[in-house]
Length: 244
Image 1 (cartoon, rainbow, N blue to C red):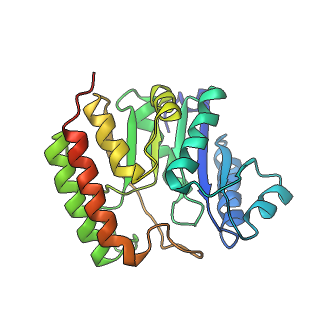
Image 2 (cartoon, one colour):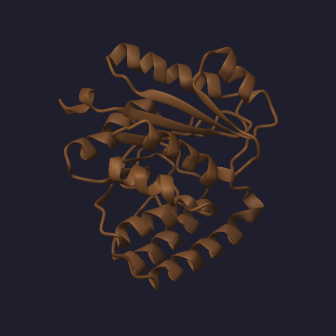
Image 3 (tube, rainbow, N blue to C red):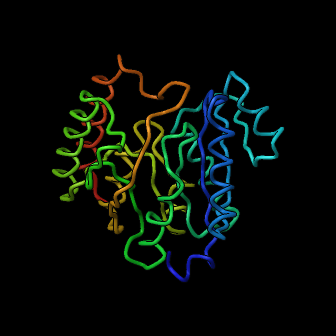
């Protein structure tokens, strides 16, 4: 870890919708990591209108939580976290899933390029360094990711391998950007393309991910084709825009 990392305020934004089976274990894993490694990653759970016991679990265990009255979806939930990060003057914000898929041991790999001024935005990728024990998603989902990657490269002239990764980190400037303007639909690929088009330094680093331990994915299998087509159309529209 960079020597300057301990001087940075780092917030882990954890969007959660019906994650009663996972959220406490996820948060406790981060707290245990902080103790063992002398790090100070702050934790913020965004309870996205969950219908289960997610909110009660968080509050009963003194976990800093923002409860959204209605389910806003992943885009609205994550933007709420970025707004909190902006108004509380965080240097780095990290998106971190509440379902057990993301490994806190890789947070340092994601934030170090930002601390070292080598990147403004970093994506944790499953695909740039494949490991046998790394969760790779379903074959159909990987085909969709590859197609989205192809069109992202056409529009942005940069290859992004893990286009739908929700394990991402950004610097203070992008925190402000996202606090004011963040895509509600298909936020991961759309926001990445927009940042590249705006001239930000975007990179990927290899991370390990796990299969979710409970709950349900925000992208249902029957929606995959619909999701992919609409993402690609949205990316092509972004390609027609001019950014300063």
